[in-house]
Image (cartoon, rainbow, N blue to C red):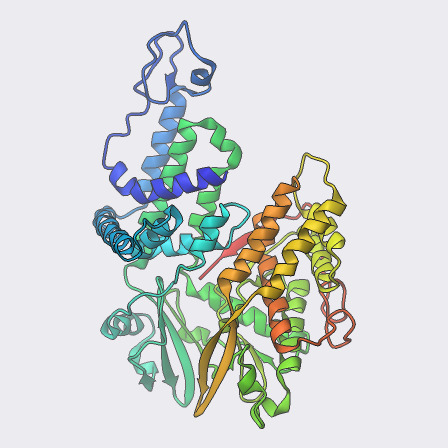
Length: 529
């Protein structure tokens, strides 16, 4: 599965060029049986190796393949296809220059994961999103690729503000805003964000970049076609559901283009805060009457990073709440959302958790959310409780419940292996960052993303060594748990997570409802950015 994932990624990059050539499937027709073998004519139908027999294709299967390819291509703008092919050519050329420069500076060649990450950055758009998928899927891809793609940044040079204004004008109307900051707060592969004002209300405008929808459709169509062709060439790949996985990624990424979905997530989270009576926690309020699929307008929240301990401990900041109570509030809120909401915030890095001058915790950027089945939820619940209690055998038992295995697992050995890995979590370092709220300058310690990912990769490796295969949603949810575990060590090092009554544990602490549903409820993870 791992190697196949890399094959379709590379083939997907090259497919704009490949698809310009005749496909040639169906030309290897066996006269006696009427079957084809991988598109290559069989010299003899009487002596056929077993491997060859497994690759036979009937005319019906070949026609089905061509029909699927034709259907996918019809949904793609031909002009965009040509444009993306030229852009891909330039990206490959730029990547080769980058690799040559690296070789010149270091005296050695870049690794394949590094080369692929650089290529994805140069391709931009879809491939940045795909790289993020790799980084968040340690159970599907090799650790060296996951570690490398964590470095992939979803940031691009901003496009001219004149183009942004055109989108706003056509979708919402520029006259609705009394002020628009022409300098963007950020520019990512799909969108660009600007501060603005509606009357006296400070807001943020998230704008979909022009032409990104056509580019995404073209890129994702090529990836899907590549996976279908691979399954046609080798039917054993169907066991990995390769084409289905790519199809799900394609559907999810295209769904990201509808900013009304993210606006609805904000509404639902705010309703959750109100329903549960959660105090001192906020999320941006979207202005849905001024938002469209291409433009999302929401409140601007002025705050510092959750890990800006120095600022939080200053006299007068946050009403004297302090960093320990602040992280407890954030943890309790996220825990309750997992317990009682149909989805959870799946990207709680320090940049998405802010603290305001009034001491409120702000959850922002609901671009990545996840959903899990009750069965997986229960297992992760037990895992979280065991992690907090340093019960490594309990962690092993919890992982047993969520993993697939055909072998007998030695729980005690598994627990000892997990303990060895988790000891490395205490060594995770941080980086110093500077933040500003008004005239206040603060220094924060941020969690090293690559080191945190390495801990997760080590956990996955240990489970596989002990005969278990974990679902992708495990990595998505547990990574958030590791984030909070690290935040607690930095902001509240003396806190007894299991014994302190202020903490509502995933393992059954008070507050937060319980999730219903049987074990057969569908598992679904959506990645939205």
